[in-house]
Length: 289
Ligand SMILES: Nc1ncnc2c1ncn2[C@@H]1O[C@H](COP(=O)(O)OP(=O)(O)OP(=O)(O)O)[C@@H](O)[C@H]1O
Ligand SMILES: [Mg+2]
Ligand SMILES: [Zn+2]
Picture 1 (cartoon, rainbow, N blue to C red):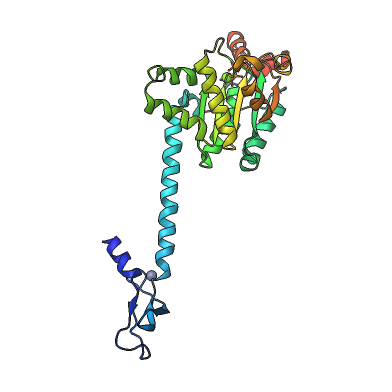
Picture 2 (cartoon, rainbow, N blue to C red):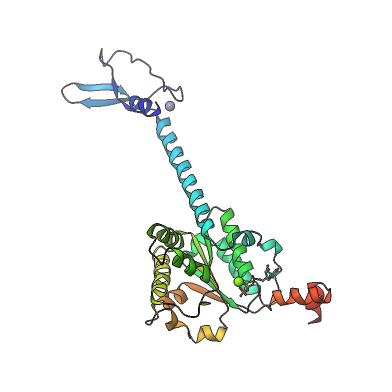
């Protein structure tokens, strides 16, 4: 019915009795306003005043399209989130329940800055490295949650999960599932690659997939935030340049498209364990260090 109304409303209605007599007023059936008149030169007939479509139609169509885009976007966000690693835990990570501990100030500021300038930074992402347990996952997940609030699509994957998820697609043979994951990794507004280079041995297929994701995101001008247990030395020496592929193409893209920050804070997990053991608060333990 809406379609039919639309077609009828768009039809030019010529005034067949006379072109100079006073025109019949036709009201828009949607907004009730008078439909505008147009003069049209009709072949063999001559100039005629016709009723044009009401401008409200275009406005409504635009609104409809916008609404549809929002729905699609929300669906995409949900779909990508479902593919993420341990989202229940990650959901609870935010900047409010994170202490800015000594050594992590730079990394903290970089993540905040990346959230605030998300659009502007384009494909430039982050590479946060540092020792285990010092808040890299907490920090990046906090940034992710902030961006999700702003309706960006984010996929958060540990390297292990990413590779095992792809492998689970029947050894890369379940095309639909396989492309769903690859698609999410390439198309999400943000990909968080947790525990980068934690996989000891990568086979050729895995190396190719990593290249495809890294390259695909570069071409789409979309960033990746990596976290890694690499030491600064290992990073600077590019010890891993050839681990991802013999020619170093993946590595060069990663280095070129990220800002590296070293999180030098100590292991918070260990601190928590000691505090529990000694029946002290974390603050007391930190003070005594
Ligand atoms: N600055 C902090 N404030 C509050 N909690 C923190 C902070 N840093 C770490 N934690 C908590 O300590 C635990 C370990 O942190 P997280 O998992 O982020 O470390 P990580 O650097 O990612 O470690 P890994 O390299 O082993 O993956 C988490 O429970 C996290 O919430
Ligand atoms: Mg981590
Ligand atoms: Zn109207």
